[in-house]
Image 1 (cartoon, rainbow, N blue to C red):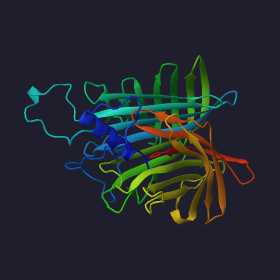
Image 2: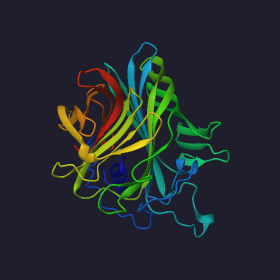
Image 3: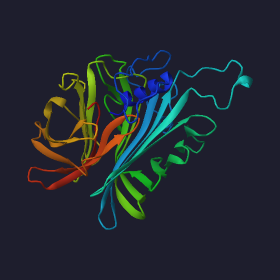
Image 4: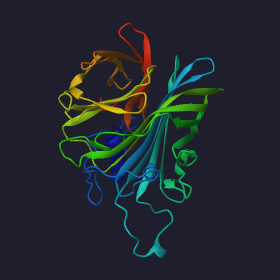
Length: 375
């Protein structure tokens, strides 16, 4: 479950060319006046085709490549990282009537990238970039050898098939005094989220996305922050979605969790929030076992209790700590943030950060990432 609302908010702001007050952020619903007319929509199950589906789907309005991870350096210091490459179309692709009159700078779509690095006992550093998909400034493509490359300027995510034709991902991005150069190798099979990859978000069957994940990846490489380059390793999570639709008008945001447990299980959980604060019935949860087998969890068996809120300088409050209880297994997971302020105060404002998982006796049982929107 990733950023349909965020992407459309950016898209419609860019089309309208309306100036935004400094550091105001973009209202998720105020900007949702557009239409998916002319684009394909995710209205039901489809056949996935890999590695082609690792690349772009220009017939849809928006999509993203999203990676989070928890890392440690050789001294055991912990870091979290998050990067998302967004592709956003202003209008459906059309055939050029007279190609000789077209400019190389013309494009019906642009790319946006968010990068964030959180440091234990430190702070979060956040960056964003934009570029039109023209003259090789940004794009996503599959090459003849089945390598897939997604890029904006020198920031890039490259997937190369290994000897078993499974993708090994290489991520390079950085700005100012923050840089990451990481290799991510899946340790479990790809997971088709929702109903065989069709993830419905509201009662409208076309208000949905196509969604798959690599829920556990070994991560190695380097992370530079401040004046220090750290050799790091850890565990990552990759999500892929594409769609042409927004959430329903009665939905205000979501709380999304990517949980990696020490016993080898992974849990993906999101609860969509209605405007009245209640949980929407189209919220979803799934458990992936040690071998990559999936087990759908009824959302009715998930109870989340918030134990602590964090308030930003703008006055927005975010539920950064709490308890997830599963009534079907009686499992309790306490979640706490690596640091409280993991706010991405960018063109779109949302909280996205590394978390620690403990059991009822406060023993460490895993790590993960949490995203909070609409607060």
